[in-house]
Image (cartoon, rainbow, N blue to C red):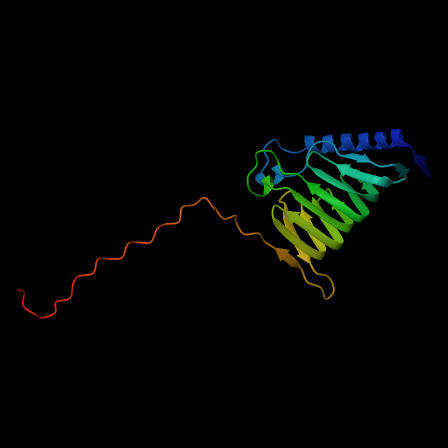
Length: 205
């Protein structure tokens, strides 16, 4: 049995996912490694113009859909979410395109300090593995680098990218070189050594 819901019902669904996210975090050890520190944390919020809650933990959303945590945001036109008994969930977002935004952590260095944005016709997010899959004219930007392919897998915790070109296609990767320091002083050439007069063989007067 399914029932259409308005925005207050959508908010209640989002609240359930928030509680599940908190419960999952409580089971994690206090000490985390560098990769774990990169994971999105805090409550997960789902918003949309319309929502429908279906038996079995499945939720469907239509119109201006968004899935957000502290640093991760997925948006599109429609979204299906399947919540599991342990509080984890799978989300599928469709759009023209669907978009991903993974913000850099304030003060972080390396990959954690780089914003990641991506888009594709379809986004699949498995919260158990922390992998986001983009399909259909997928494109990802990390810092100044760019990856394009028919399919791109993005490992959220490590901000790592895997790409494939699909049937007969290729992956396109553009890497930006380090910026040149135009303020650097160019060393002056060494002065040429003084020339010694060559004797002519004639006696001096």
